[in-house]
Length: 173
Image 1 (cartoon, rainbow, N blue to C red):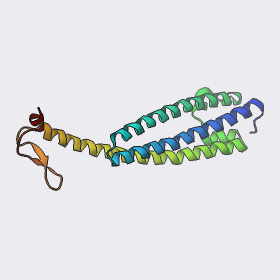
Image 2 (image 1 turned 180 degrees about the vertical axis):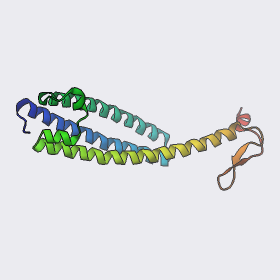
Image 3 (image 1 turned 45 degrees about the vertical axis):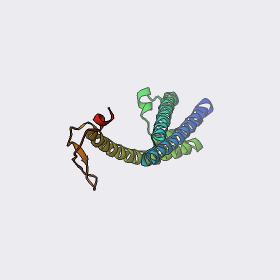
C-alpha cells in the first residue's frame, strides 16, 4: 500500500528511527567489546567506563524503542489497527504496509538489528563467563584472607588447598 502526505513522512520517520536504533545496537556491541578487553587486562577503570557507556546506550535504545511504538501506533490507526496490535507488528508487516523505499529501509534496519542482537548476546555470554570466573577467584582470595590459621590457599596448579600460617587480615591489622 502506497502512503501519501503525512503518512509518508511518518513512515520516513519510522525508517529513520529504526536505523538510529540499529546504529545504537552497533555502539552497544562496541561498548561490550571494550568491557571484555578491559576485563582481559584487569583494568577496573576501563571496565567501569565501558559498563557506564553500555548503560547509557541501553537507556537510549529503550527511549527510542518507546518512540518507535508510538509512531507505529499512529501509523497503524488509519488502517484500523488497534494500538495493542500495532505495537506488536513485525518489521515484515510494517514494510508490507508501507511499500516502496521506506519499506526496504525498515527491513534493512531490522535485519541489521537482528545480526547485532545475536552478536550482543554472544558477547554478553562471554562477559558473563569472565565475571563468573572472576567471582570464583575472588571468593578464594577472600577465603584465604579471612580463613583461620591453616586455611585456604593455592597449589602450584591453581587449585585451593589448606595453607599454613596467619590470616592476611591479622597480619595487616
